[in-house]
Length: 385
Ligand SMILES: C[S@@+](CC[C@H](N)C(=O)[O-])C[C@H]1O[C@@H](n2cnc3c(N)ncnc32)[C@H](O)[C@@H]1O
Ligand code: SF4
Image (tube, rainbow, N blue to C red; front, side):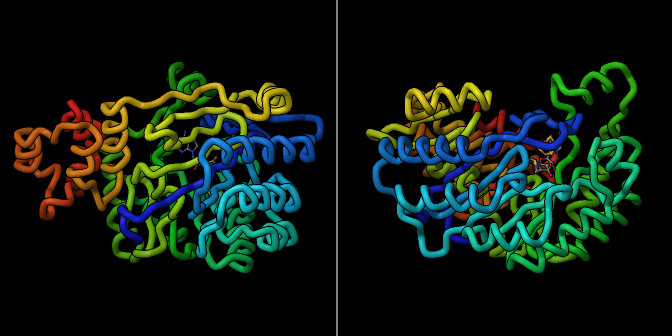
């Protein structure tokens, strides 16, 4: 993994459409029954990229992430047009990582070759489960076999690919998950994202859960599922480098590291967030969420920004702590002090260390231990208090 001190600048591009809405998902994704006007969206992506670059000034882009929604619904030419605009308004670094998120239902080899020709060099596939009944319950429209076929296409087109699985699903036992995870690892290359099912507010799953019709694992089972994940992935050479992300050393997703290491990134597209350093201040930006309103805003104003707040020192330092402690590499306490103007409380660090939840490695590294990770939110809240 490149050092956390090396400069990085990521560009996130949001494609806000899906073929259908999964009942657990609260991402900014929308289903359209009429065809999406990709040419119009492309013009707006290009305009918002130009407007953002005019604000940041020159930057060397180290990673690009086309996320969604389902970016694999875009034509390769649309993806190519977006990447060209990014290359035109900023400088592309030597080994820029360009990831595209894909849903197995929209994967075909011709399109993947088109993305590769357009400049994509990594794909991340939403496999979610290798069990057809579980896929159905998750509202997915693909089978496990179709998902694995999509993984095979990804493998044949890209040197780097990853896929996502959701665990801690209703009725899932640690033994079932262990078997499924081992099958997944046999298909994985260098990277896997393994998310515990979260019941997000205002989703169909939240309503079912509230009505007692969808049971998630109790705390002990959830912990056993988490421990199984760490154990099996660690033994398979895919240790966690972040709470939900596992990779061979050196194969971490460089774009996601930009977020967790609190580097700078631009957000392009409906609802995209950014963190930009302008006039000596870190700005938190967000574009209009609703796709049609975003389009109209960009077409009339040249950008879709609805939020552009300079963060206070305190907010910036808290964000650094919150994001950085998700990484197994941890944080440099000196950077926290430089951001906030005060050191982390030594008494709190000493107590959490005595409890076995954090550890220091020299002066420059404070990190959460494997015993602390299941309690991460509490550990961070304690340190930030
Ligand atoms: C934007 S989606 C991925 C790409 C594509 N749309 C798909 O679903 O195949 C990002 C990932 O977030 C995860 N995710 C979304 N909602 C989740 C939830 N409520 N709990 C756990 N994981 C979730 C899924 O694994 C999903 O693949
Ligand atoms: S999980 Fe993926 S396909 Fe399903 S609604 Fe969310 S973004 Fe769309």
